[in-house]
Length: 329
Image (cartoon, rainbow, N blue to C red; front, side, top):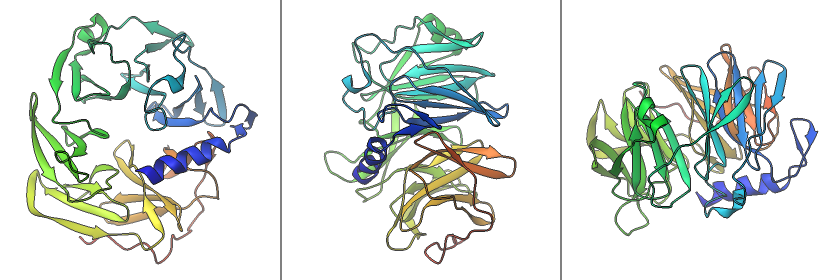
């Protein structure tokens, strides 16, 4: 995790241009959101927000809470400054200090939402289920859940997590978190079984970047160089299976979800995106650039979004090399 944070900070400090325009180096893209209509949003630090549609890019910086700069919250190098979530075609913007905006008539309009967090103002993650339920995770072992109507009215159901988690996501309509096992440095996976009730799946690993679902209906933890399979068809495995994919000098980072596609960014000796498909692996290589923070669909192809906001097309037919092995079926 530390390596990924340092890589992000190193690239950010070296930026002089974003999307071809001179701007302070502290402004860089952290989250990419496909709007489902052929365009996508780039959300970043210091109020930076842009919408890209084909070759057209419009900048729509969001107003930040007065007196609360991005650096005022204590995980600013890890937690995104802002993220866009699309609900039924309408973009909603959530900032790290817990502000909420809705996109209407070409501008961001602030919503007055009072999250019952006891004064905690760092929003770590926002999820929207297929059933339209909102899930909010603030920087504590607390989850807030609400229907859209209750969300707008400021009414939330509170649940607890076993511990603070560094990753939270929905896989097969089930909520998973990635935290620690007790007071140790070993990472543990938490699977929600009911309100405030979670099953614990130990990993015996110190570094895990996130969880994915493979085409073989497996739940896997993303490690430095491969996958740790912990579930098959909804059932935990008595002994997790290790699948090593990368060779020495290359490392995975936090997985990227692009619609129904799962992509794993690779840094180190090799760089690119590894896509896990039903038939095996697909490698996407890109011209040299900064750290990949997101991806967009370009028909059957994929574009890689850099921290600078630049979108790189893949190199046609470029293999990643012998350092990547096929996933065993």
